[in-house]
Length: 211
Image 1: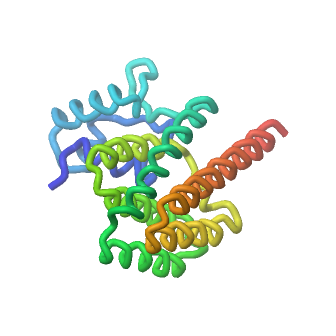
Image 2: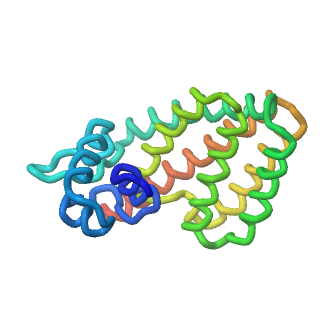
């Protein structure tokens, strides 16, 4: 059974709780069927990790400002690119087949942004594992934990879902061919396009809010 920390983190990651939501100790304990003590400890841990912030006496899920978003994508790009390069070097034939199968299976979810967002996380995590570098995997887990603080998925933007899967296919092809440089470049392009899409969406929504 997952502990309170993992349960809360999973709920944030799956969009049950979103940026700006207030987390109440008693409600969390009831939802997850655990006592309040482990929930309190989990909230303290998440606050230390900057996943939560204080709003008076309450804790709310943190949001990322423009600069934090840029910093996060900078770190993510470098770490993900390294993971792709190492995956091209170390991935087993079985891992390659799993990655290829994920891309094919995910095409059935085109049009379902939430399902594709979950699939996207699984795909990237599989690349991390295929790097066969435990320390890199640990750092990427921290980065993707912070990604959960983003209020929306770019996969909801019209047309982005199909392009994303094509980008995934390019990464898989490069890994399968043991082409480290091409795998790294394909991963960098993929993250760059995702970041650009997010910036455009943020600008659009900010403009609409100001009308």
